[in-house]
Length: 288
Ligand code: HEM
Image 1: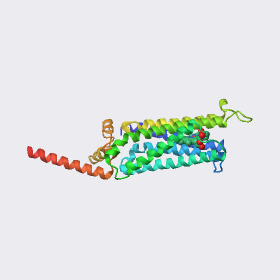
Image 2: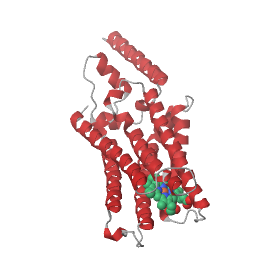
Image 3: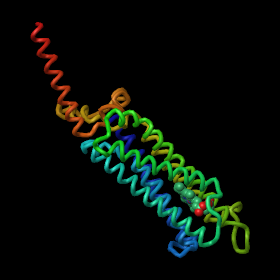
Image 4: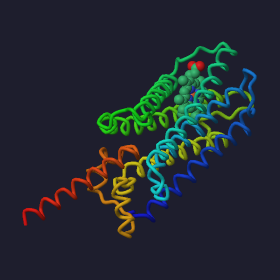
């Protein structure tokens, strides 16, 4: 892999920022916001940011870059698709529980639903995510979907995946700001947000960590040289005893063709190519 060390440092930074964000959101609700519970009160609301950050941001981010981890390139594409889909499904389930918590809390406290920009953008992201998951499952995991559909849809799938991830990060930053403004209102004994109490500094830092995690994931997922090599090239390089690597040309040119075939299709495609090669060679010999 080109720039392997650079890839590893990006991976290390993104993982540290992601873990730190999950830790910060837990410390926030446990230390400053009455902890976690399921009672219709503040502890129930607190599941909303905790599961949104750990599930919808951290796990989704990892799911996005899982194909790019070079030590997974020996695994079949099908297995990697299952891991990618599995992580995204876990993220979706956690986010769904997080939404149940916030709606339940609002209903218990008679607070209106879906009035803020955060809730509009957030719900839009969840709906798009569920569509992305459903279509991705139908097109890329079910064996009978045609190869042309899979390759035609891949640019859309990739674009919408990155768009949704960005939207989720924007929604989280809005949610965090909103919550700080609601909770840190000037009242007796409360230092207002504008006076930067320790909670505000801590939670602003949480926002910065989420932003950095997203920024690193974006960079890693948009580098063509860090893309999983097309399976047949990888296997050919291996059988020739070469260290597998991928060039920019390969990753962009073959990006949406062989790369996305299932193992069975890939095998038959390769056999057909070998057959054609033999026929070509035989033809050349007979004309010599
Ligand atoms: C990142 C993914 C997130 C999504 C998709 C999301 C989505 C939503 C949705 C749909 C609602 C509306 C619930 C209702 O009206 O009953 C909501 C409410 C809320 N969320 Fe989030 N949220 C996310 C993250 C966060 C985070 C990290 C916080 C930080 C505390 C947060 C704070 C809030 C607050 C304070 C409300 C209630 C006020 C309002 O409706 O805007 N959210 N969220």
